[in-house]
Length: 117
Length: 113
Image 1 (cartoon, rainbow over the protein chains, first blue to last red):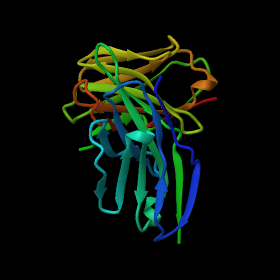
Image 2: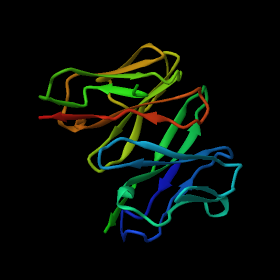
Image 3: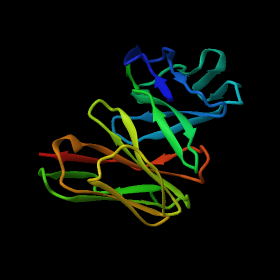
């Protein structure tokens, strides 16, 4: 069975600090996809990134960067120079493709990030 | 021009009632999903439809019945509501059957009293 672990339940930082959110996954599939979603206090789920298992290149998008390491089954997310608007719950997710089609996202339990002034 | 919309946003009802939540997407996607987020914010898939055909049905009580009249709509009907059904229900959509990113609606907060 697939599993996603986000061991950090809550992280508090002061604005402008860098922060890394950890994500560790388990799967027996050789082809899989990893995702990060943001859930701000308003409640919607916002897609941030998708990464497939064959692409271990790190990715940077503005203040966001992602470090994918198959050797440790981790897909960590770093926010550089955090801002108050980054305060949200961040979810890591893993996708398995079921026989007959279908794309089922298995979510981690989320990390609540609080950025204070 | 909301991509994935859900109605209603809030739903408060009593135990034993039947209720429906509607979802519509205008992204041209052909796969839609329902997820449940409990009070601890844990998200779990319930159903998925592709071109109006049910393709994922997790272990969900029979009281929950999804219906997809066309590929842009996926509604969720819940019979005989129970206290434990209180949660936020999210609709999502994606393109095709492969593992593409899913785009979520704003959620429907269901409270059963």
